[in-house]
Image (spheres, helix red, strand yellow):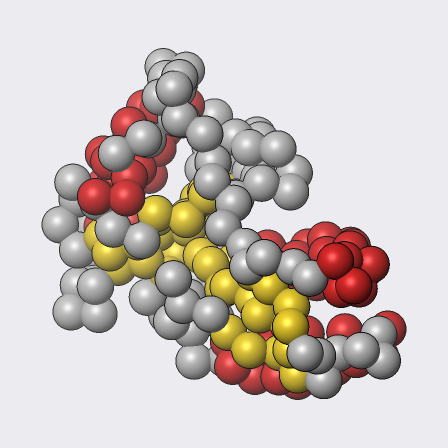
Length: 188
């Protein structure tokens, strides 16, 4: 088994392409720090490497975001070795009792149809493109014409994420849905 790496638009995030699925196709898990990684032995091991700041699991990839002061030199091979060990030993990605929590705003009953359309557009048009860069965009809420989204993976902290939201996601949603006035990023 060979793990490939790809650079992302975020210079401090590197995408490790695994060549096999580790999560369902629309599922992602974002570990914002070591404390949040308690449910994943693999994420905990990656956080044990000095300089690792964030770990993101996608369908068939892992994105690791490093501290700005640390170089990828040496870090990349250490992370690849840890990931390879987990895959070869067929160790679990998550502990058996863990569930992935979905955090969303409460949606007003009259907005439910619009929210379903927004989620469908996100899942079919937007999220696959963002995943190619090692990130994800997660629906958080909708209220009064504003769509609230969370950026994950390499998108988190990427300088171009604001442009992606305003000139990419917002335009696409507005093109399909007249109810959408604006898109805003939520940081949780």
